Length: 297
Image 1 (spheres, rainbow, N blue to C red):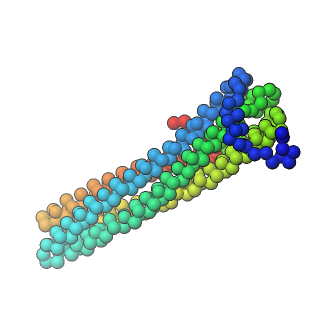
Image 2: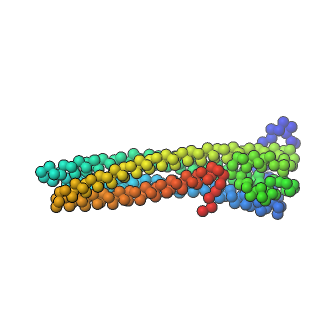
Image 3: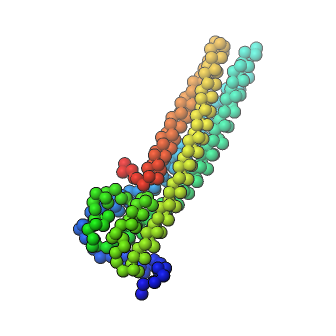
C-alpha cells in the first residue's frame, strides 16, 4: 500500500525489482547504453589516479637514491680537498662541504611527497568505492525509467547526449523530467529515494576529488623545492670546476668530481620532469572529473 505520508524508503527488495526491470524499448536502448558507457569510463578514470599516484611515489623514491649518490661524491670531494697542500684546497673544501649538506635537504621534501601520495591513494580508494556504488544505483534507476512517454529525457537523443549523470545537476535534470513522475506512488517514491542517494554520492565524490586536487597541488609545491635544491647543486658543481681549473694538474680530480655531480643533477632533473608530467596528468584528469567529464585516452 502506498505510504500516504510519503515516507516510503528504498529497500533491497525494491532494488532487486528494479534490476529485474523488463526489456528496455528500442527508443531508450541507444541513449541508455551510451550513458552507461560514459559512466563506465568515468569510473575507470578515477581508478587511473592510482597509477598516477604510484608513478609519483616511485619517482620520489628514486630521487632519494640519487641524493645518496650525490652525498657520496661530496664526501669523496671533502677527502680529496683536505689533501691539497698550501691551503690551495680550502675554497674547494668549503664548496664540497656545502654540497655535502645539499642531499640531506632532499629527504624531507621526498618524505613530504610520499605522505601526500599516501593521502591521495586513500582518497582515490574512497572515490572508487563511491563511484562503484553510484554506478550500480544510477544504472538501476535508468533501467527502471517508465517505458512510455516519448518526451522523456532518455528518449530525446539530443538531450541524452549531454546527460552523462556524472554531476548532481544531471540527477536534478532527471528528477525533474516528466517521465520520472510516472508510475505508481510507491514506485515514484522509491525512484526518488534512489536518485537522492545518487545525488549524495556525487556530492561526496566531488568533495573527495577536490581533496585529491589539493594533494596534487601540494606535491607540485614540494617538487618546486626539489628543483631549487637541484639548481643549487648544479651551481656548486660549476664553482668546483672553476676552482679546479685554477689548481692546474692538482685540480684534475675535482674536474672529474664536478662532471660526476653534473651527471647526477642531470638525472635528478630528468626524474623531476617525469614527476611533473605525472602531476600534470593527475591534475588534468581530476579537473576533468570535477566537471563531470571523462578522458577516453
